[in-house]
Length: 175
Length: 315
Image (cartoon, rainbow over all chains, first blue to last red; front, side, top):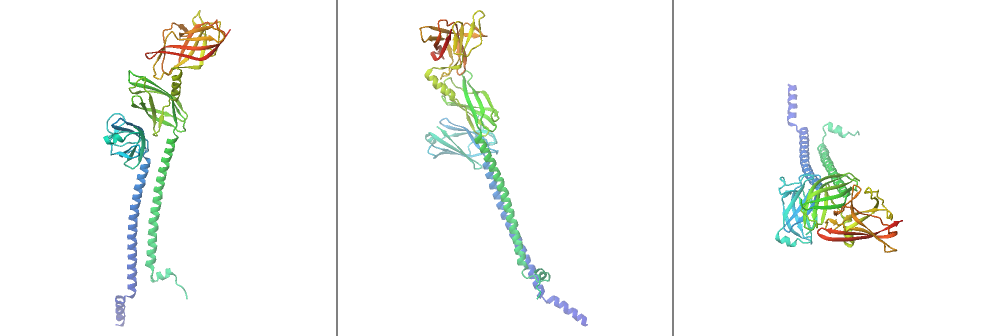
């Protein structure tokens, strides 16, 4: 009888004496919170760093590609109406696309801007199908100069070509 | 009092502060791992970019070090075929192999241009003559400016300085120049109608028949052919007396003198012209020599005297 009493008291103590359990539970909760918080911080930081990595990677790739672009002006000819520009891709990267062409007068003021001008094959009058220049490809731009620009296109002029990758190439020509 | 270690305390269930420590360690590890990862990755990308910059710098240096000399350019206009023949001497004076991929020819008189793909590779130090024909409708009066384009994107102008200097000189003294070191005389054997070996001297014997030879080059500005007629001759005049003698223009075929009809001097082409045979028996000592040339240049009359030689006539 006395033994049963003792056991009952023991069970009662286990069930209702919370002093030690409180410590364990609080420690578990704290650890879980810390781990959860740590994991979330880690995930967030990882995501941010991944974003940064991909942005930086993109920048480096773009800059490297831009660096590898090189266009040489073989000849610039003006017949009074059209300005024909003969180009050679002497860089180390394919797919050089021309985005914009700027024509400047002798006072370095822009007189006409051409967006996405058509690229023609070097010989003949056919357009280059993919409108880009691969390594060692030659192409020709035929730029129709407007009447207003024709009056300003006198003397020592300048042409600037900007590619899709952002590289710029320029040369002077005399009208 | 014995101090209990932190590990023993934790082992015995006294975990006060453990979460703080764990959290700090964990966060430090996270920060360290991520920053190291980003740093190393950035470093590797930077290295890639630096390598690309290095390569491009090398290419730019190569481009700047390309040095090809295209000199002695000669243009011949083939009017009937509407083509221009270009002869040029190429020399790679740089330290890199060079590939020429295109030639541009610009007729500055008519403001026309043409280009032709070429495929010429030159090793460092290599020199070679090169000729090609470009489809361009030009005339004999056309002036040309040309350049090659290399695979690295450089342009190599075809130089004609020598021609310009000579042409300028020819404006003053006429359209024909003479190659002085190539002036020679031959002893003529009248019996066998044959010429002896050429002697590149400016003294000739007075007692023998001699045939005089000189390389003449047509440098006419309009690039027309010069047609010399039988009136052309070499005339020797003694300084101390009134003694004179002349060597009429002649033709030599297979080392034998043949009847003279005409002699064409093509533009820019040195042509050997013979005079004689004559035995200058009346001459002795130093004589003034005049090469008297007469004929047509294109469709116009042409006459020129080259008076720059003196010959010593030996007994």
